[in-house]
Amino acid sequence: QVQLVESGGGLVQAGGSLRLSCAASGGTVSRGAMGWFRQAPGKEREFVAAISWGGGRLGYADSVKGRFTISRDDAKNMVYLQMNSLKPEDTAVYYCAAAPGTYYSTGGPRAYDYWGQGTQVTVSS
Image (cartoon, rainbow, N blue to C red; front, side):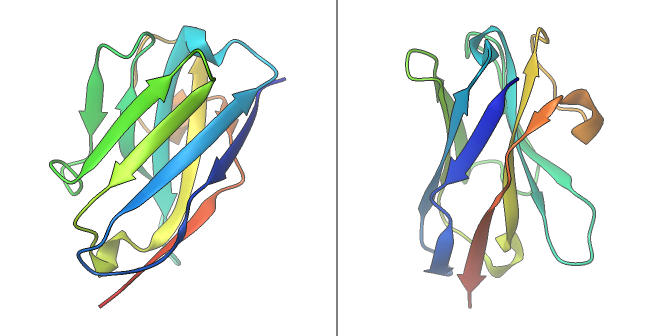
């Protein structure tokens, strides 16, 4: 059973940066796509970024393109989301997700099989 644990969230001023981390255990997440999603109060969970099996392909939501960077370190079973130039509209709970056996997906939450518990990111104006 795959387990994902996010960390690195917090309160930051607009224009600031945060780096989210996702620690994976209990399964071969290195052989699959990984993604980050977020959910703001009263809104549906939305795709933020994805990285392919092996890390050769990256994808981003238009709203974060150029500001966020996803990466993975399979030797450490870690996935990261570097967030720069943060805006108040980036405020949400951020979730790490895994899709073992899937090469790459920028689809919705249904494309991913395992989820972390989420970490809160709050950007003040």
